[in-house]
Amino acid sequence: MEASTSLCVKENTAKDNTDKLLMSRTMKDSYNIKQELTIWDFFKCSLHAYIVSRPVRRLFLFVFIISVLSVILGVLTIDNGFSIFSVIYSFLPVIVLLLFFIVFGILVCFFIYKTKPWLFRNVLYDFTHWGIVRHGEKTDFSKPWRDITRFKETKDFFIFYVGSVDLHVIQKRMFTDEGELKGFRLFLKDKMNM
Image (cartoon, rainbow, N blue to C red; front, side):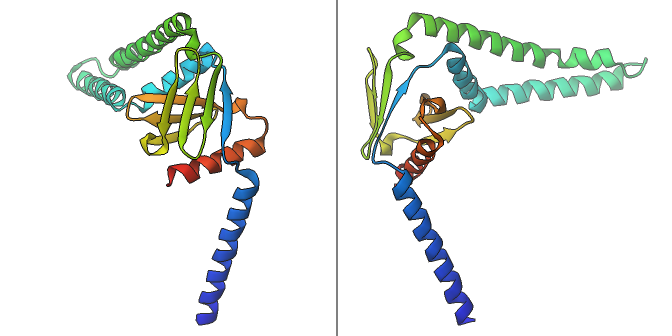
């Protein structure tokens, strides 16, 4: 029993040492990342922020439940029986609300993108041992790691949350290669677990 326990401890220690060696080879001490967000990138990030927002999810859940209840009550009270049109008509509010949010989101993103171009072009993020610094025309920002509440990785972005509302986006396409991206990912995990 003792031999197997010591073998497991040795394997875990060897794995930890391998992970640390990999981190030291791929992870840098700081990262400087230039950002050039397109309107489509901005819309995708905004849509993601909508979707993860609790009030928006609760609103859609409420409208969905009301639509399901409408279908059930409609089927129970109609003498003619069940109709596919009554189901479509009952879910129409959900579809209209979804389309409204998408169109509204596109219009707001377009307006912000056109009226405040300095938010999206010629922006440089510095990630250091201290925290995150954003340099740009009219938009300087700096926060230590302790003020970054969380980060989320999506298929195309890293999204950093400062509080519940303020978010900052780093595009994955701005990294030169997969190795730099992996190093940045390890860097973030190391800094966020401080």
